[in-house]
Structure formats: structure tokens, C-alpha cells
Image (tube, rainbow, N blue to C red; front, side, top):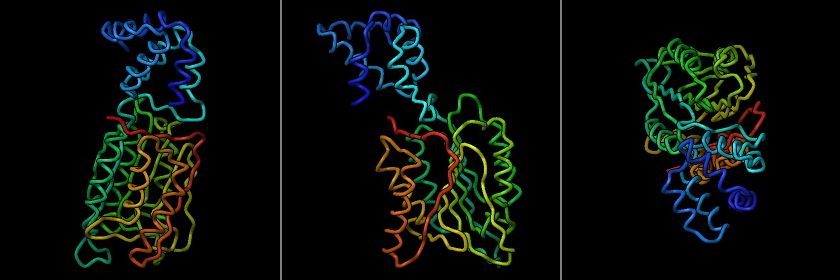
Length: 307
């Protein structure tokens, strides 16, 4: 609503804007006739706003081009907010979803029953956020490393954001492959850091694993990539809980918080709410789990669900 008021106030050359909007395909002659049928100039601009903003984010580039060419710089600067990572394209990018469920019979790692609920919820939510979700099931440590390296290099100029969910068993500093071997966070960090294709793009990583301490030497692992936001299901030397019927407590909490803020999902500010929701879910099952996050983001990441 704030943007709508600002838009009506500062469109001072409707004719020029319409000319550029028609020439680049942002609007049609039918749209123009509908706008000009309004007698009141403010009503004309309100109708213009309604036509355009129903089509976002699909037409972001065309809108910004028309604003710039018609010299509506105040509106251009408002929409091209330097404090927010741009989300110009549809889809915004890919969600790389690695979900390990089955482990060798007789190993110390049990089948992760209920994780299909997590996959279903993530798919539905991020589809609404205008992402393509790519599922990779039951991968070894080596295969996971290969997937992360390959998909990071496949990112294109028409992808605004890179999202990855890592869901498996885990120990402190590593995620476990279906072969029982570990893929360390430091290795994942190196892949992301060396990816030229992901440079300057926001990268959202969600790690839904335990961080239990077993035989490994107690060595801290850190992510140090720019433009990165990592959300962990739990803290070091702790467990992440999962229900066979409902899915993982962390994913349940994350989905609830993001669903309740689908119109404006500010990733950084909602981290606190996710932590709070995890705590609430814990109390219901008399368990103890604390989620956490780490961020090197330089701007806000805001996702919006559209029809």
C-alpha cells in the first residue's frame, strides 16, 4: 500500500510511461484503454499500478526499463532498493534439496522416516516463492559433494538466489552420506567460495541434521563465504528431532514461520521467529532443541509468494 501511494504521487508523465510500457510489452493497448477510460488522473495511475503489480515479479525488468526511460527516477530508486537483494526473474533460481533417508542395514544410522513430509512442505512453499525445486535423494558423501559443485556452477545470470537444503544424519561439522561417510561443512564452504557463478548472489543454506559429537576430534567448522545465510536445525553437540508422522521439528517450524509471512518473507529477521517456533515445538514433545543461524548477507533477502 505504501508503494501504491508513492507510485500515484510520483507518476508525473503518464503518457511517456505508457509509450515505453507498450513498446516493451509491459502493457497492452487494452490496458492503456482501460487506464485512459478513467477521468480522474489519480484513478488512472491507480489502475496502472494494479495492472502492473499483479504481473510481478515476471515483468520486473520491463517495469524498471519503462520507469527509467520515462524518467520516473524517484519510483525507480524506490523499487531498486539498495538495501535488498534484487529478485527480478521468475523463477528466482533453484532450490537444491538433498534428502538422505535410507542407510545400510546394520549401520549406526537409522532410516529417516518422516522426512518425506519435509520434502513435500519445502516443495510447496518454495514453488509459491517462485523457485524450481530439484530433489536429490539418498546420496553418498561423494555424490553430495558432486551435486553441490555441479549445481553451483550451473547458476546463471537469470537466477537471483541460490537455495540449498541439506537433510540427513550429521555429526559436528559434517553431514552424513548414505555410505556412512562425512561431507564436512568446510568442503561445502570451499565449493561455494570458489563458485564464480554464485558470486554476489544471496545463498540460503538450511542444514537439517544433528550435530552430535562422536569419535571426531573437536575441531570447529565455519562458513566464511560472502552473501551467505546458513540456518542450522540445532547447535553443536546436540540432536535434531523428527516425527515419523509430521516430519522434522526444525522444518515444521521453518515452514510455519515462512508460511505466516509469505507476502513478505524477510529471511534474516525471521530467523528469531524460527528459533522461537522450534522452542515451542520442543515443549509440545518434551524435547530440547535449539536452532541457530550464521549470516554474511550484506542486504536483506525478501521472498514473496505470488499466484
